[in-house]
Image (cartoon, rainbow, N blue to C red; front, side, top):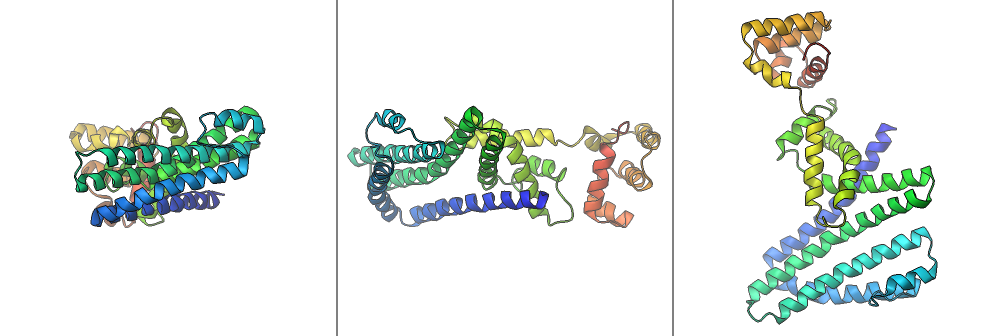
Length: 318
């Protein structure tokens, strides 16, 4: 079951990574050929708006350009799935509308140089690509809310899982444990050590995001279209939840008497021989690395970290 769950989260991650890569391709193009990229945005947005409007009109008989389209939708008596799909279409159309308004303003701004115009248009185009992902997340959030209002437990669980998986995948593509050292340390507290570090950290990150992201996203979903606030708060929650015990850092400043007290607590707590042996080593050389400790004890660095985790969580030792 765990492998199946991890595979589902990896699938969400890969889907989000594809979206991220498309944004990167566009931004690279905008950087190298800003005028051409800006012209492409100006050509594409009106066509995308028209296409979305016609598709909705054909499917539901509703005109998204009409400010009263919601009233029209209520009269259609759509089912839950149709309502969510219509909402996605309407939000996407709104994204295009906002972008088109910016493009019109830039076109009419005679103070802009050609270079400045191209830069602003390309920025607006990039925002459209980012917002398209947010539209899907908003639809999934709405689906969960609707399921909670009218569905059974199975429907609620299914909707919540779809939202949490997509959130986890999206945020993971924009979160780097390599850069965020505190997050990396938190993930190292819970990751598997029988796999490459990068893969194990990603799996741990996806699981943590799956658990933490939905509640945080529910606070910001109406305003945090680029999900920066959501990403920041979720990372802090993960870091706090898996913050290494204070005893790990305190070992480095123990006096001899305090070190003897730590060893006594280890004996009194009944630490297994291997864990006690590591505790002795940490007390004697508090700054020793996991690799060096592993060489001294004849075990792998991963095994050292696993033993350390057990020691620090043994009642009476910390």
